[in-house]
Image 1: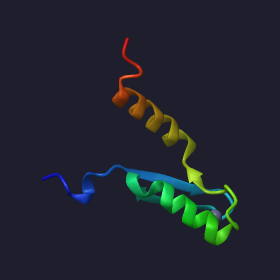
Image 2: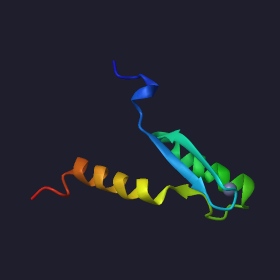
Image 3: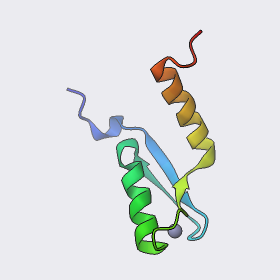
Image 4: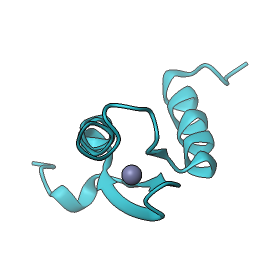
Length: 70
Ligand SMILES: [Zn+2]
């Protein structure tokens, strides 16, 4: 029983052109970025995960997968 939506880490998506940042649950990140770029930027790759967070996420995921273990 771990379906509490608050359990999902929120990821900031930033769009330099719109000067907006919004936080969405991790599972929705890809869809949210797609939707934003599709609707507002003709499908161009403008909005993205906040670069600082993307790096942390990459670390987290890598740790999860055991890629950083010796
Ligand atoms: Zn935008």
